[in-house]
Length: 169
Image 1 (cartoon, helix red, strand yellow):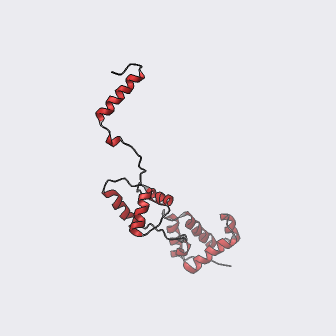
Image 2 (cartoon, one colour):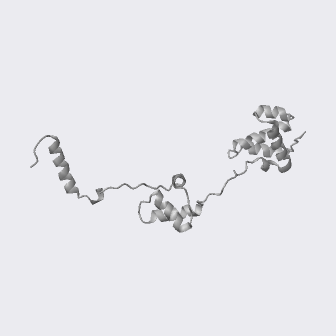
């Protein structure tokens, strides 16, 4: 049986951490498990209260007894480190914003391969770009920039004339 006896300082720290808005909900639940164990609740009772297994509650009580309050914090999720670091994203932001050019996803992907020798899935790359506020735009093929406004206005007038059924002059 794991007995939790908190000192006055530990109780004050427990209250401070429970009321801290930065404390994550899971950590707050673990702190509450420690508080309940201190007040005399048994492991099965605490497990029933939180709808957890007894082994899970026992794990957190033992973690607190061996490591203190910091042992109740959630650890970083395991997994591969991201390929696109903050430095690479900052460099990408600098490069894409400097010449007023519109970059597409494939162009950004090619730049990463040439500059950093980094291969990133295009779909994932576009998700990361949007998540970090780096918009990429798909370019469309258009001749609007080559049109002369006078000719466009004349052609629109001709079209209106044809729609009304009148002959063109």
